[in-house]
Length: 635
Image (cartoon, rainbow, N blue to C red; front, side, top):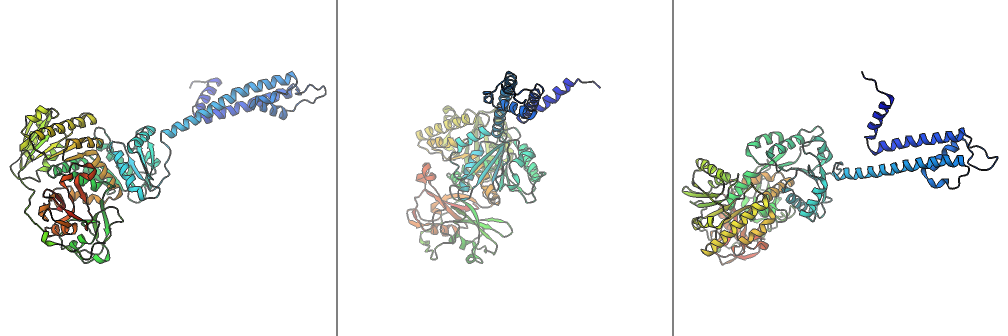
């Protein structure tokens, strides 16, 4: 075993101590100060220094000499009246030591304060707020989620949103401030750390969180991070006994089973790629549907709420409930055992323990304040034949991972003999399209290679023969560049349509919500902003997880869905009527009416593109021939 010198041992101990930071430095300064003062006091005692020029002056004692040395060390000004050169020399030495030690002390304190501020900037301190919404992870979706939760919290007392991600705290705060703006009464707390670490979870006070949103990161295999994060929450060492309220995004359907397993019944998942594919497939056939979905999912408009049945409705039927609410649109029943019935049969009895599922402005506006005398004018009923199932021609411009899912979903809504043409500047897209044909029952699919942002490519296609046009984003390039190419394609289509006197039915996928306003110029019918739609749904589910059951029904081909159907199917166009009459006419057809669309306003963003969701049922309205009623129906 090697032998070390005393000097080496002292140096090793000194270096280890100094590495502990400013506190260790201050400790060493205290030791040096004490030793210096004691040594100088001993010198004064040993040499009998008096500190005075008087001939009979008594020598200073050890304590008095040490005290005067200490004063000179702390404040050089105390030696101004010293007498006797021996005393002056000792005090001068004490002053030099003091200047040296005080300088180091001030520097250490300043460094320690800077270090502490830097540590606070890194966002590693513990969060003490409770009953907060906790967001784990970082992506473009976070800005919409914060806006929506801020809106939802507007009537709450001291609400708080806590964010934990591996992004720098200062950078994250500046980005949130610039993208979100007004936080109203909501407090935003940002912390920096890995969402996979249990210590980070404790730092953000996860056990007192009202709800937890787990974001899918912008990396390869993002579902792996989501699943690990959820697993860390549900199996944390210091978790509480009560179940958590976790909402998370899963991109690949193949990972959903594993995610639900680790979620342990405490997590609800939004299958993002599948959801967007279904929305695009449904929207391409119904102009204005994306606006309806956005309105339902935004807290700023009318949302879906559950409200317990009043005693006056128990024992009555679902049809009675449709008319019982003046300014809320009833869409279904939430049974006592947790089952969601969207647009059930009109004669379905309302039982004790049931709740109505309503579209309303807020949770406290679902009030049974309908008119006692409905005054339904059945003379304006006009039940013309209508079917949405027919052979259709669809043009798909561009291609990405959602393309196959969109066409597979579209297969549920069309008749045999339908045609699809895919145009994309991607070699692999042709291979995917060819493989997709075996999965489609009612559509024949073809592929043509071409750059959809070039007008010549679009001119080479007989666009007039297509019933619907779907424009998909290129996800292999920058978001802004992708949206720019999409906008160019839309402008070309508008130019071609105007030259041929034709208005195309176009649904467009965009990646950045801020570019939607630019897209309105191209007069596309609908814009599906993928990240925005997912963000809205995550926000809604963070407030009420039971809404997932409602969305599962609304966004799938089976059961009742939202449709925009011609007004002539319900009432005679050009005749003034109220919405009670519309509800009654739709109820006779087994449908629940929830709003209408004025086609003349379909390109006016300030008027919600003509969509009126949950109108006051007593308000009078006169519909034009080409207007639509928004209903929940099985067809």
